[in-house]
Picture (spheres, rainbow, N blue to C red):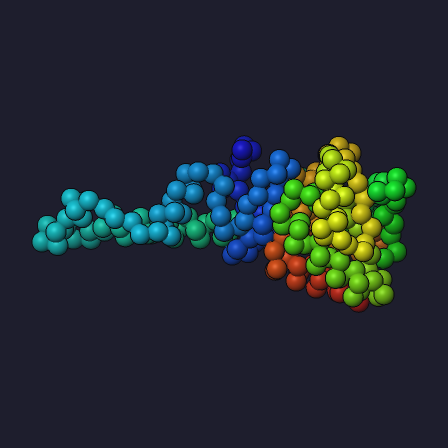
Length: 241
């Protein structure tokens, strides 16, 4: 359900406007992608745009009876569809006010790992903190990418942390058995502590921190473009003196 003042078409683009958006899953487990509508009225329009529409003959007057400047219903519908798609492509769901307010500020995250040890995400390194869950479809693609970044750039000072918001530990352990990663995985059951305090509403949510511990970039959702962005941002921060 859209919040007051937001567009009725819900997209998960990665922080900045793009023509096609990243897939995301909300905290209720619903998945979406930037090029797919969520609300039914917009979805029906898109189906018409992508399919073959037919119209009764009496909707399109014969050429001899058309008034000057006549625009057929087919042309009008196609124009409407094009306008909707262009409008959708230009939209970017903004991070929550609380999450957006973290940009430029030090981030203090402490959570338990799966062994029950308290882990503090400390400053001094370039850090990627990814909030995910086993029921989040885009997370299944993102975590191996982040694991690859940790392996390639860990020696240069990059640290990656995954924070699971799963309620069920068995589901999380099963997920990690299928998609094993080498970076530290922390657990905030149900997101009860960190999600409200940080304003996390969509998964995955990825924060990129500089060596000072300040949040430099925020990403909502994940696709190949987001992966390229995160890698470029990490490398740029590693290059900073």
